[in-house]
Amino acid sequence: MAKAKLMDFDKALELFEPVLGFEVHVELNTKTKMFSSAPNEFGGEPNSNVTPVCLGLPGSLPVVNEQAVRYSISLGLALGCSIAPSSRFARKNYFYPDLAKNYQISQFDEPIAFEGKVDVELSDGRIVSVDIERAHMEEDAGKLTHIGGATGRIQGAEYSLVDYNRAGVPLVEIVTKVIYGAEADAPELAKAYVATIRDIVVALGISDARMERGNLRCDANVSLRPRGQEKLGTRTETKNVNSLRSVERAVRYEIQRQAQILSEGGTIIQETRHWHEDTGATSAGRPKSDADDYRYFPEPDLLPVEPSAELIAELRAALPEQPAERKRRLKAEWGFTDLEFQDVVNSGLLSELVATVSAGASPQAARKWWTGEIARIANAADREPTELITGAQVAEVQLLVDEGVLNDRMARQVLEAVIAGEGTAREIVDAKGLAVVSDDGALIAAIDQALAAQPDVLEKIREGKVQAAGAVIGAVMQAMQGKADAARVRELVLERAQA
Amino acid sequence: MSDISEDSVRHLAGLARIDLTNDEVTHLTAELSKIVDVVATVSAAATDDVPATSHPIPLTNVYRDDVVTDDVLTTEKALSGAPEHDGSRFKVSAILGEEQ
View 1 (cartoon, rainbow over the protein chains, first blue to last red):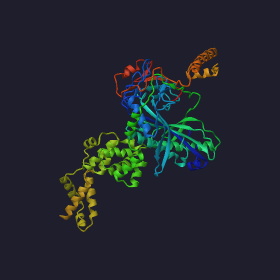
View 2: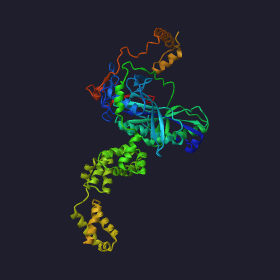
View 3: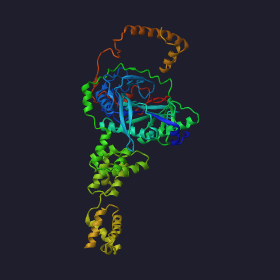
View 4: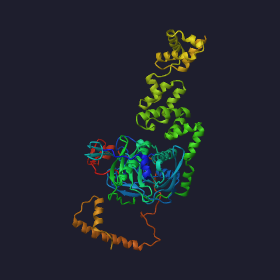
């Protein structure tokens, strides 16, 4: 794939105004699917979480999952939307084997939630309000694997294999209104918007929201219009953006790509584009065309959803605090400085810190792990920190440090092993025999050996050169293969000098 | 008279993946027009105070509890009606299209 020519980002902004729009799909973490009683679970043997409804077998009938409706209403309320007194499902007809029945059950002209607003915070603290057009309920599609094509993609494939485990998983699709005026913040706004939606659904507890698993997916619409022109440019819709970082990069890329084409007198084709994490580029997908005639019509197998005012009031009362409010509270609770807190927020690690702290680690320790060691490993592996490890796992490592079982160096080693999937922190400590040696007898023996090799150290310490102890500590650490508690060794050496 | 044209019949046939001969298109254009005209007489009878309906039974909020039931099929049973499968997945012809 030839890489497209890109215009310099700043120059692109001089010539054009970027206009954005986002469609975010959120998979709900109900126990069962949207319209059938099959388990809603990630992974597992293909086609093991299916009922006749998921397979579109003749005579099977969908029935709405009440919990999914409640979750959708809660999400709509959290997005500041109005909840429709009556909403309906519709069939979106298309031929593609990711759904066996040749249509997706979605909502069309009567979505459950509409007209909302979400406040999104940029890294410098500015708040941008994003207007929400609608949030509607639908079902996810199955997963296709294309076999035989040189690249595993659809072109050139000889056949495809289908797993319907994901078919029918409840989704809420959140559609923004057209976003003007983002200007140079457009890429960052895209990332911050998706991060905000993620924070909202995590706080509501209605989705696992793991982007790398597709629990949260963003389609980014980008178009450019020349400065001074009123008419909107042709937009592209970039799919396959599976991390916050990719959302930002994909929007930046599209702005630069489209600006280059337009400035050369070319035209933008209205099409779906696919983001490729490895090359950092988008490629052309399916053009929007005549075939996009989905012939929506009301789903005759389902009845209207008419939530009572009481239900809406109940769910509204149970809403968690707004993201901005939550941030203020956490910052105060954790006692972080502005800089420390902003660092965590900008890294998109707030929820991870909350999970780590609630599993028993101190806020400062949690912060150091996530913005330090874990961010470093993630960066080196070109992955998201959240993909590597959970808050509970981090807390377990930290608890071993707090108990004095591990020193910092060993804790980093254990963390790496946890990330590598070698087991829980305690299992790794046991398996590798990693506990700190806190037996004074063993430490004193090693200190004696070190002092024998460096007899002048004690004298230097007595003369006030306490830093001379470092040489002994180093030798002891080496002799004990790093398993000594350095602070204890230092204490013992100083005691010896004073004896 | 309805506005069903030969082009709209060809368009519909394309969407439905049905291959039609020219004779069939002519024939179906006339038939579909008649059907649409009949439906139009129903529309004429419905006055403004009759709301559109999508279901003959006036029920709402028919729900299911969020509980896994024994409707779940074994993988073997799920695949049993398929012409072809490969391991535990359905096997289908390569499709010249994409996810929607």
